[in-house]
Amino acid sequence: MADRPINMEAVSKCREKLRGIGGDELVLEASVVVGAFALFTKVVDATGRKEDPFVLKIIHTVFFVMKYKATFKYGFAAIFAFLWCQTS
Image 1: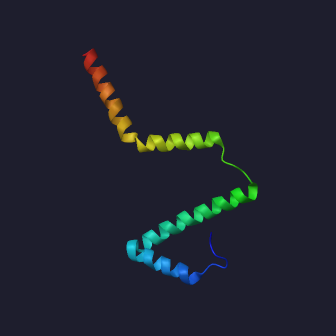
Image 2: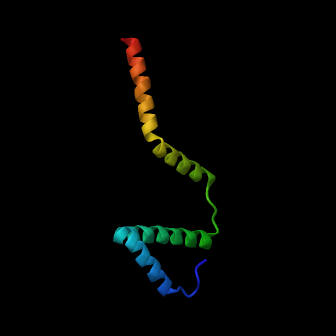
Image 3: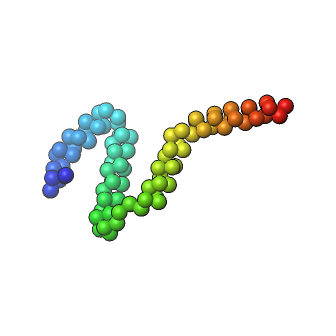
């Protein structure tokens, strides 16, 4: 949990360490991730909503396909090539 009020000196030190590792781009990317997390947390806390199992299944499927996209592509290409050779 974050300390309240937020210790801006500690935040500045962390930001400078991050900038030293990856430059301004990494600071921006980290800021976007933290901001998005904070936004979703506030919405969930305010509405009391839980995740929808159907939406979670869709998200899981999308990420699964993205992760194994190359495998699927080459697998379908191999099947197509095999079937095409069988008909020739």
